[in-house]
Length: 419
Image (cartoon, rainbow, N blue to C red; front, side, top):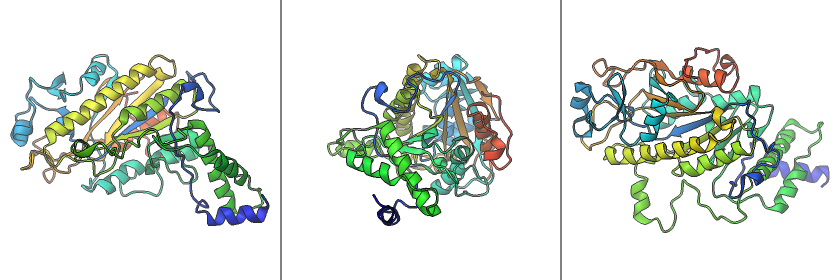
């Protein structure tokens, strides 16, 4: 292809200036997952798996102060009794659906960071999630915290940070680098387009900067598509879209999912597990589960979702534990905010502030970190923040991703001791 044709295609195709995202997911054996993978997991490299619970998970009915009479008074019929929760310590227990995490707690492989949020919390899903994903407590930045980590440590490799899902979340977009999005159930890049994109990606060093960026984006697209493959036909469903035969049952199951996230957490984690087993170079993965916007009928909905989270995380950790690299995996689970302490009139809870963050895996030093927010010392009927969310990120950056947190978090480098 001549230079003039390449320039015209790149500047009119909508690729210029953007970051190419891969559409396609693994549907075959681990040995086929990644052409550039070593085939042998790197036992020296730790891996972060970040789980986002979209919708605002109710922290008080996840980490439950069932022995506190104030909790019982505020929650009424929505409250769990002391004999229902899975006891941890200090009068707190896990939601009854979280039996797998309770075992991890008993094995000292579950850390519970309490009262986590940012100063002056916002009740908006989208602003709050933007703040969490950009790690900017005063307002969202144009880059995500893992994206900035990629800027410093990724070496321009889009596979260092991978989001399993239809779109790339803001947390994976840096100022100069972006991670890769691998869509479950998508169609692999056709061979003809793979060849064309590969050719178009070869842009001379003396071409304008915009064309060089476009060429790099196409190179990323072909690399990620080749790495994670995918079905030639759409054989597997995108987890964010209910099937044609799902009917009303899917609608009921996804009640409260309007704030984003996906449903097939197990399928997302399977992709991560296969990549780890194949020796993929990825150091940070992003997966998600939606449905936690529980303004009404919360108890059954949240219990179902927490049960799914518990089951899928347990199966994932059990699988990757079989490899040395898998035993260095650290999973962190967070949501954009907790819920109000007082139940509403619809047997649900409204948007709140702080909540617990769970960190689990073999390298984790289990136990409580941070102070449990008081139910008698509220701010505008909301829980106080006792742990700055950036301390969680700083710990993961320093002790899992081997990075200087100050470079990523605007100078913030206070860490916790959970890993």
